[in-house]
Amino acid sequence: MNITLDNITVKTGRKKLISSVSALFPSGRTTVIIGENGSGKSTLLKAAAALTPAAEGKVLYGTTDANSIKTGELAKIRAVVMQNPPVPAGLTVTELLQLARYSFDTGKSRDDAAIGFAADICGCKNFLNRKVETLSGGEMRRVYLALALAQEPETLFLDEAEANTDSKFQTEFPALLQKLKTLRPLTVVMVTHNLDLALKCADRIIGMKSGTVELSTEASAPELQNILTAFSGGKWEFFKKEDGTLRAVLKYR
Image (cartoon, one colour):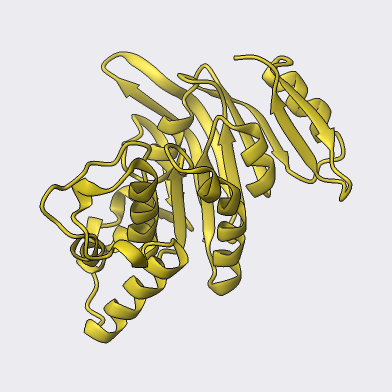
């Protein structure tokens, strides 16, 4: 299902966080939103996920206005992993994952299968019985990704999904996304400030600056290296690997 942002503006009070933004997140593809801190990339993701209402314009899921979709139905369509999710003290990991099936009426067998699949693919099976508050930052990210996948969503929204994870998870993350997309139809919209991760994951790249879209390109674009160099202001250095794909290295902070 395509998700379309039609000239949306998001405000807090009188301040515009993003202004007159139009964008398309195509069905079955991974779109990565990049930009510096404060550029509006997380606000854009929240608006697309129907978590933050647009003051102007529309967010369309297919041809349906997202505002007209009830919360329970949205939970069956899209799942969201935010950058700093809350830690619900007192729950085991299994109990937390069971919350993903709250809006579903598919029966225990289907629910258990969805939770088991998500826990397995995200590497959570070894700590299903632990209390959530005892987990490390990296373990928490795995659990919240599993929580999203247990919803069996059509679209997965990820805000800095690699943040606070160990190097093993960060290395495996792009392959995990690709594996998920081969196992079921899945549209992915993710935010990252890490251009190297963006290059490893993206089919399309959207670049945000000062609340507007300054870049929209296919990841396969012939001039991608020049496009990203100009967008990043030379902050990142790009080079081609032997297989022809781009790598990005941060030159300075």
